[in-house]
Image (tube, rainbow, N blue to C red; front, side, top):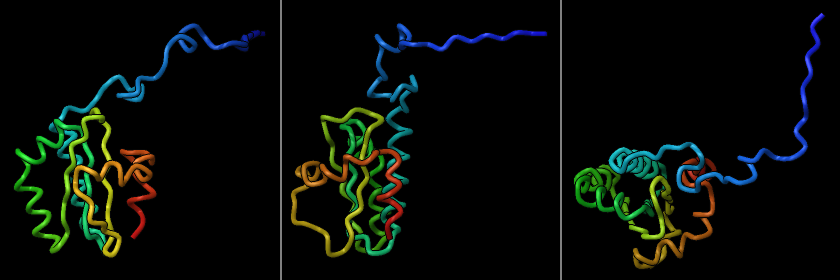
Length: 142
């Protein structure tokens, strides 16, 4: 017959012990380009704006993404605000963030605070501790 033997590794391999997962790409090796990521975030903003009782949608994004959304896609952002009567879209550039990281947060009616837009990252620090791209728990709440 055939005898198969396997050896159980007792310590991590050299690669595992001397390398770490890239914090920017989360170990995938690729990062979406700015235009693609911007369009994805724009769709997320619209999805959040469609939800019932939404007063504002805050998108805290890296500077190049904010620049693209506020300049090249300004008409699309305005169209979302017009279609979703009364919903305000706030796009805040954050120089501490790098692509592909971002946060899209929904503010319900009655929860809004009179905070200046550049202070929003500090206001949302706790909520931004959630996984950014898959904000499942936050997006599922009505």
